[in-house]
Image 1 (spheres, one colour):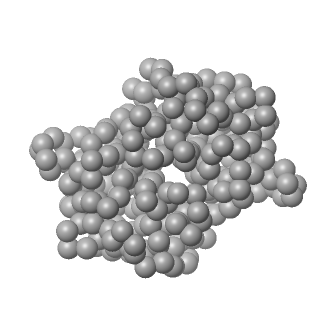
Image 2: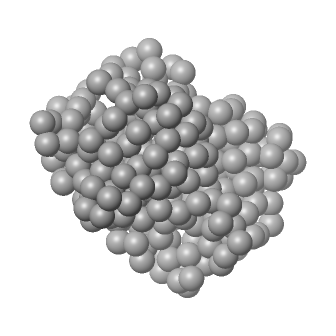
Image 3: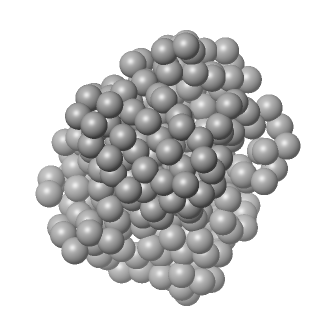
Length: 130
Length: 130
């Protein structure tokens, strides 16, 4: 059994910071359960262009509000606590937090740990491990 | 892109109720992303004996407090918002919520939808779909 605490993990290299967000990677490929799990903070006022061409991702909103735009269709969905979105088709999308948001993210295949987005908004299939 | 809302999903057959808990299955095997994602409410005062011999599970505490006991070692960990536990060795365990708890659960392989625990505390590998 693994037990980890977000507050403790944020003091370690599990906390990865980038432009517009930080993400604490609580569960990774090295844990060998076939997915990774991260608690991500999206900063208010950001415009985050993401495109996970190598991964499936689900995102569940724990706190905060914003919107997600599906770039293929232009459709915009409200994000608030209790809403989940899933990039089941490697969808290009834009997340615009209107307040600071805390979201629970699951990736398949799992991340190695140090991934940040490349110039296309993707994570490498095999990123650097922590 | 899939977008689902917990409050809406709780009005549908995605909400599964059992003794000591209910679980809203927001993402399932039929969504084809390789894991399932559920928001589970654990009722205060319960003693939940679980043993996912067919699955890996991660559990992240969104709200509420309680404890988890590892039946193999007798070790007890406090559960509070921000704590995650992971049953990476199909660990037999007991969850004792002291308050109502809301937790975000990920299963690999993904659930089909209608699974409740059998007499051993497990979910069937191929449960009934919703």
